[in-house]
Image (cartoon, rainbow, N blue to C red):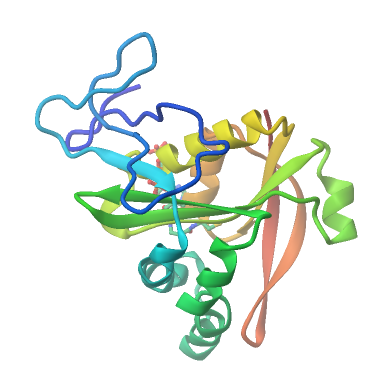
Length: 222
Ligand SMILES: CC(C)(COP(=O)(O)OP(=O)(O)OC[C@H]1O[C@@H](n2cnc3c(N)ncnc32)[C@H](O)[C@@H]1OP(=O)(O)O)[C@@H](O)C(=O)NCCC(=O)NCCS
């Protein structure tokens, strides 16, 4: 693995399970050198990436990142109105307030220099859609419902750090896999997930406003 010029290596230290998030408590995920025992250090004056469980107090800031990044995952042809309606209905600060207090959901935030630059939201319950339930072979499996990083942090290791966090969390809960839906035209995300060990196992549709999009369903066994 080659360190990113600005951010270096990303690494998660510690276990995520049962860490009750408390305001401003930093659970470490630093870029920089990493020793063989798995603890992390910052080296070379690089900015640390800190990944931690988001709390209710983060609802507004995570919603801001969600609103800024959701359009990046929409295929060409998506209308401004449809995107705005999805953001209003699904990604508002109020909705994140609900997500962040839902015991079945896990939200990680990634911070650089104190600012949230990405987030991951997972759902730790069986898929409700019977078609997807039949498609996912790893059981029990955690759904990665959202994984979004601001464009300035793409290619930096931030997304991989968020993925590391959910992998460790799912493993610590004894889950057998992760699954997600990704738009068929979202080549970058598909490439990222493939690098992370996901394979396409099926398909689904995903409604954004008045439009119905075609998604691949991808799975990674743990
Ligand atoms: C998806 C996302 C989290 C991935 O994080 P990232 O930091 O961009 O991922 P990486 O840079 O490690 O990997 C992306 C890979 O796609 C490649 N890539 C870039 N543009 C691409 C394209 N149009 N088609 C295919 N691959 C592409 C990159 O070169 C890289 O591959 P490489 O490492 O082999 O060179 C991030 O891009 C993102 O937040 N995108 C917008 C929101 C989104 O689409 N979220 C996913 C919803 S399912």
